[in-house]
Length: 432
Length: 126
Image 1 (cartoon, chains in turn green, brown):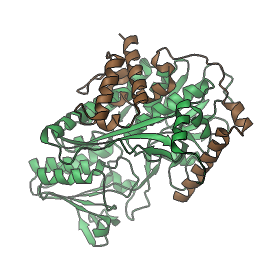
Image 2 (image 1 turned 90 degrees about the horizontal axis):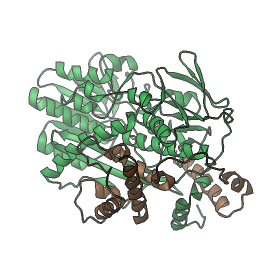
Image 3 (image 1 turned 135 degrees about the horizontal axis):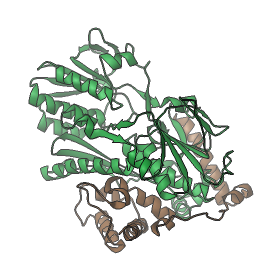
Image 4 (image 1 turned 120 degrees about the horizontal axis):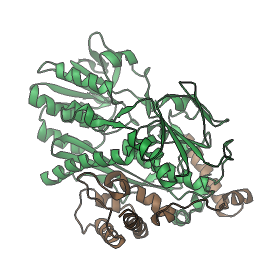
């Protein structure tokens, strides 16, 4: 870009609010429903992104009518699901519901699946046949898996022999039961995908907490992480923790050293790599991912498999009036996490309130904090603060970062306590 | 993907420059604010930038800053207290696990807006 616009000038414009319009966000609605007195927003998906957006729309402007479409009446969160696998929490501890959103925030929660979006008519059709009209639509569909990316892997293999457990619920229970049933001295394979994927530190927290369970209940068992990557999130902190807590129990192999999975064989419970076959008594395949199915069906994705968005309002750059938040969106430097989804849900909600008022949205401010537990009383974190620049959403270099590598035991205990506190507050901030 | 992204961002930048230069009458007309139908009830929310900045905090500190767990509540604290605390985290003069990593991401003006938001929210929810 050869323009003379300096970063400082851009920051001045951010404060004035003018920058938002530079990204094409304009205070007008072209929807067929614009004439009705109460503005209607439909939110598809009741996870961290969608539930936060629905709640904050109602909180910021009670005149807006908000309908949330979610097929599940109980939502099991991915955060804390690794704690369940390690025997530290029960599924009940991870269960969220929509009662408070419905009763306190007066969100119209419909237990159904959205099957089709008509962007031209501004309508959503549900599985039941019901059609909902909207002035603006928020899509928070989460991830879908690239089932054809690994030969031999499929949804039916995931549901029987080799769970992904990367969407919490029955998959978490399946993997947990396999760990409970495994013989002492067994081998657990965890196979994470290349970037980008949901919850970058998640596979390594999973390895840690499974190791904690095995160390106590099934000594001499081993965990091998067959990774598609050459490095991973919070790597130095995890490796230091593994050496201290679980010496010799967790082996990590990078993609270049035999970590990359070429195919799986459910019949023999083995995976093929460049360096030969690996057998596992429990095999957890975390497949490559893409935006949730409805985002593809609605034509909101690009060649990356994610949804390009306007970083001011998270409005689709393909279909204006439809906002995509959470894992399904391509949000610049932001990771795919429940926290990021919630942060994006609030930014989208605040932007939509302004747009309905005919005003330009404020420049967004986005944040992420991600805790990982390595053992009870041993927590680590990564934080990031994000802002809008001419390059899109970027991480602020002066801020964020990791738990110090030389953190003492008191700090690690504090971080573990805050991990639980974080869960308590983010789930209340999201589901009421 | 990198190529595509660059094209997209260049398009953003170009529309930005058009607007910044005042050369797009169409864009100028469309961004003219219509009269606001309703302002949010809390004073802090009357600054939309302050509101967007402050909504980041509630994820860890609870809705309206009311924490239900071990993380400290910021609800009920004065704007002056919160501004001083945030600046102390930013400078590192106050110990924290994660707060200084966050506070360093904001200018002093932005920290003041956040403090004013929660100072006001606290007052409204007594």
